Length: 307
Image (cartoon, rainbow, N blue to C red; front, side, top):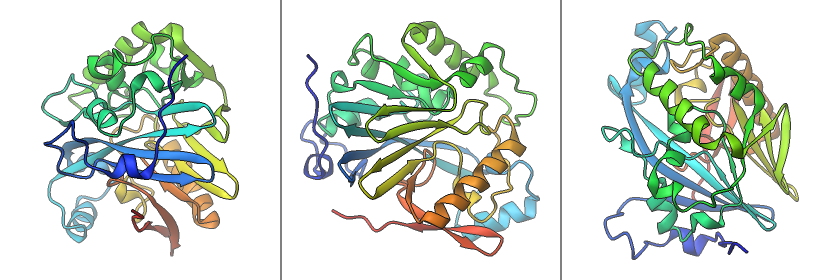
């Protein structure tokens, strides 16, 4: 029987003795009703700022970057989530792994260790989609060797269909298409037998529901947590930091940019109406906050850290 690791604020917020060089916050714990949640930073991805908004007027993008005190290189945060509900421990996305040493990411395995989470305690994995910064950790020895060899991996069936013959004709991220394709292929070659496919939605654990949204990729999914009166949604790559002010901007990695815009606006409108909390893969760590309507767009309202 696998030993389940309890996620708690004291354990997740303290400096790990096993990681003396870990001098920055890398994990943040909270509760959603009876569900324990841990947001973990996998690191950051320095990328050209133009990848944030491929259809933006250059002057408008520059203005947004200037207002945000940013330059021509934008450092994308990269977050994963661990949730414990009932007797299940669910890992949502797996970070970049170790295949891209030029990026300052791929730290999930050591940060799980620092949080006191044994990968063997993970009963389920949910992948929002199969881009390399979400599946790469499953291909790296640090995490892969610690997971149960038969751990079920939940992903939308439409995502699997897409990667059987991926169409990159509408992407503008040039230079990394081969790496993205190779990571997805390697993941499928190694884990196909462990995939648990769903069509529209699937309850992975009590109150932990994966829902396919499409847009960013055809099978892109979000994960909604609900317990008692509390709610939290992990948006995956449905939203990036510029999308609150400019939800119409296309991210360079959107496989269907127009669909991604429709999905994004729909999700943000719903979350603004309910005032529920959200986290996302590429919002600044710990990426916990709410969204409010601001004229024809939206406004990001970070949640005050509670520690």
